[in-house]
Length: 287
Image 1 (cartoon, rainbow, N blue to C red):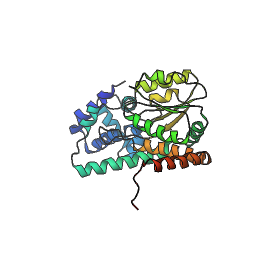
Image 2 (tube, rainbow, N blue to C red):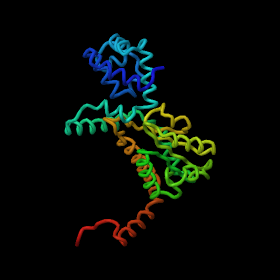
Image 3 (tube, rainbow, N blue to C red):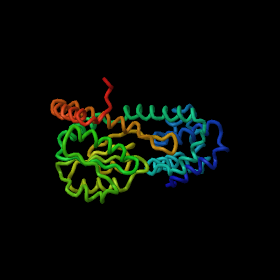
Image 4 (cartoon, helix red, strand yellow):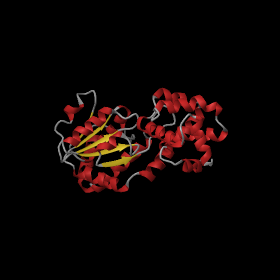
């Protein structure tokens, strides 16, 4: 099977030699490799208005023995994603306004794809799991900690016994040591997936806890131990992973849980409003 970095290098090394149609294929693969990885040569060609034979010739031009070998390399690419250096090398646009437009359009597309691909039944079950779990642990490493903290902040307003597992505070396994079968562990991970997050999920699974993963693909390593999987697209416009769609998904979870528990949390929010007013937590308009 072709190495992940070999595919990117082959595209870069051969780009100037490619025909106009082959360059369209190359650009589509670079920007949408998660889609292309599961397309037949015919379907890939149809999606960008080139012939199946052009797609096959493209694979041969890159040195692959046919399209299936290129497809294998693409699937490896999804598993491992790109290094930061590779992302920078693929980004040639330098005009600020073009970058603004490209990034915002990519975020919009990520949200659209998330709406289309998320498993609605899993979403309903996760809402129920959040409500019914004895304790909830949320784990996200590196950039995913932003999503984990956000989810933890709002779930703590809605219910008790919510903990965000934080790497670097103490060993993560110490923080999740007492996880049990009545608990819920939410693992959040996007490329380039953190091994520590997966290790925590594996431990929680061994203790019979229910596992939910929020990730970008069904072949994400985090899905291997999941009871429920919520897919949120994070395709990048450059070297920065987009967390816009994952944040929107988490927003939806929080709102859905909050509305299910509306009567229970009314008193909580009334008390919080009183505390916020008393201690001037928020700026208020002058009289």
